[in-house]
Length: 72
Image 1 (spheres, helix red, strand yellow):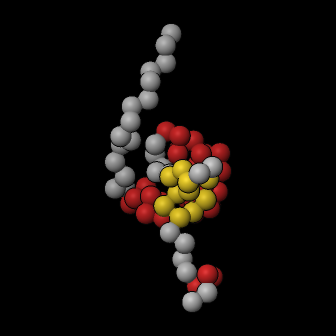
Image 2 (cartoon, helix red, strand yellow):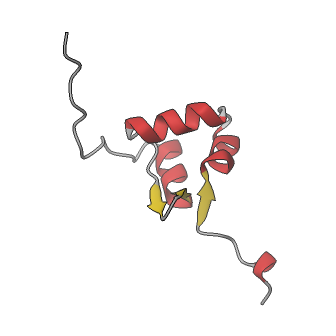
Image 3 (tube, one colour):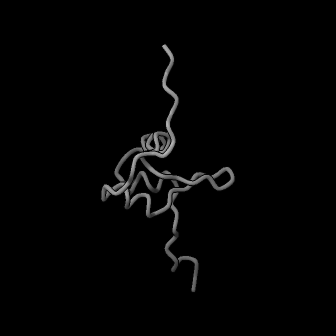
């Protein structure tokens, strides 16, 4: 089986953005806010295909970490 015959289990953030029809910067912002699940592998940030499907079908739950509130 050739590498090109295998469907990758992960996408780059740019590839996920293309699938979702949003800009690359918007996709990175979604990752930062926890709306789009991503995994850091060394220096790379990858998006599991399942994360894109979860986002599209509405099964994605709220982020598990709380972001610090802005101080006035």
